[in-house]
Image (cartoon, rainbow, N blue to C red; front, side):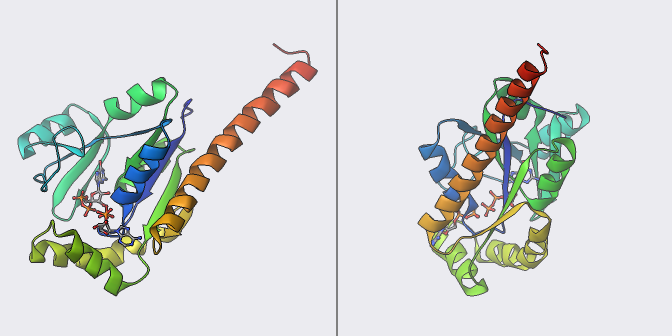
Length: 206
Ligand SMILES: Nc1nc2c(ncn2[C@@H]2O[C@H](COP(=O)(O)OP(=O)(O)O)[C@@H](O)[C@H]2O)c(=O)[nH]1
Ligand SMILES: Nc1ncnc2c1ncn2[C@@H]1O[C@H](COP(=O)(O)OP(=O)(O)O)[C@@H](O)[C@H]1O
């Protein structure tokens, strides 16, 4: 499928820093719009319905699945998460770049549908640092942290399937890398479009 805007997908194990990096990118770059997912997990401290997620019941999620409302969805850490078709189609139809913060299963589903999507995997610098970031975030119960750490190895094994891998050790360095990926993708499309237009003109095609 072809589309006018660029589609970026960021995945990472819990605590690697993907939400912080994506948030910082969005603050710097008004051309990128976030996609807000639906989830059956409950909100954390400061999270707001419609901002971080649409928090829905299992029955509401089932209805969206049955109504073919998701472009992708997956079970993650015992809950369900999905990207609604409307969320992507609305934005891409307006030629905006869209960034999805979803798990590796969703990322690979997106790549099959939007073959031009750029997949970025964020890794923590070490296991110790991953654990301490989850503990320092202070949003999850100890057993929730253990589930997330237990799932991290399987998730990180998927990094090699992604187009880019960023190690989030120094935050500013990782943010620089993420910005570079977004910018280079834009330049690629701009120069491709320009090259195509020039060739069409040279060939006398309209
Ligand atoms: N497949 C899929 N995964 C999602 C979606 N939204 C969020 N996720 C992923 O679900 C996982 C859990 O997210 P969350 O509960 O916010 O925890 P966090 O990773 O600790 O911030 C993360 O890997 C998210 O990237 C979605 O729409 N689809
Ligand atoms: N490079 C970094 N160095 C130190 N702490 C970080 C870094 N990146 C993120 N953090 C912190 O780690 C915690 C987890 O980050 P978060 O963005 O919530 O991760 P994720 O969305 O991947 O679960 C947060 O408290 C965040 O402020």
